[in-house]
Length: 367
Image (cartoon, rainbow, N blue to C red):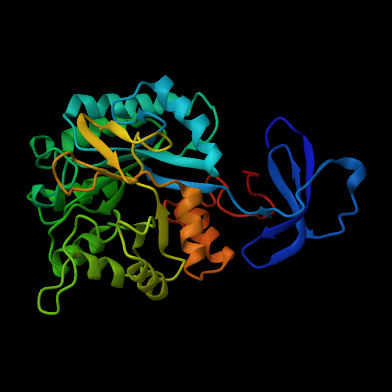
């Protein structure tokens, strides 16, 4: 809502943390919310107004895990192309997002961090909140769509260079806690303010709990590419699910995780811990065909991207508005769906108050 000094949105169903206003208004000044409530709004002489009769107004979606869309692969894209992507993802209701890499050689990941940093200052469309390095410090046994030859032992020197290229952006890193050198990297990452996620891992329950004790606070696409449930040998998934300090990324396309497991996860962990993500790749928003994920070729058939000649799913073509609708279709309230698509993502990264996003509340950004 930047560019309009004073505006009131009227007659919408307005979703706030404490109330659902069936016929509500949102008053905005200089890009920030100043008042929210039930109609009628009585200060109209001060504002331009837009009627949203028949529409729902909630906080903009925050996608904390995307590899790209509209032909843009963020790992290898220029800063200009990433800025262009920022302008295009808004059509899916996304107002903030985090470009996410795949495992690649060190110099390419440095360039990725630099390109995202530059793109974040171009201010075109959705706001870039940070940089997510999904790998290369992961378990090759759980590589998924990551090239095994790019997976390597954790390096504190590499981490330092990624932080330098990221500048003021929040750096996030996915790591497998069981691999050699992981403990030292988690400690150093947390000391330097890096958010640590557990993913692409074959860790045992106890190894995962150790990583959480050291400061890991998010799960990378829960259940996918990680050790799971077994009554005698529990893995990473149950440890992450049980730990109340951990936020849980989940791909709600009904393909990566079944509807039944989505319901189980939300019912157990609640909307306060579940973070809806897309894990989208460059094929999102495009026709079926062949696309890139890093330097890996991916083919989209019947709405599912896979590595050609295999059953390995390579990301998704999910969008945040579709993830939101999928969750609502399972019977969860609109308020809960907004929480998982907006509020919890911001909260999980410590950005709820820092950037004033993720809520329809006075003092928060009107995005």
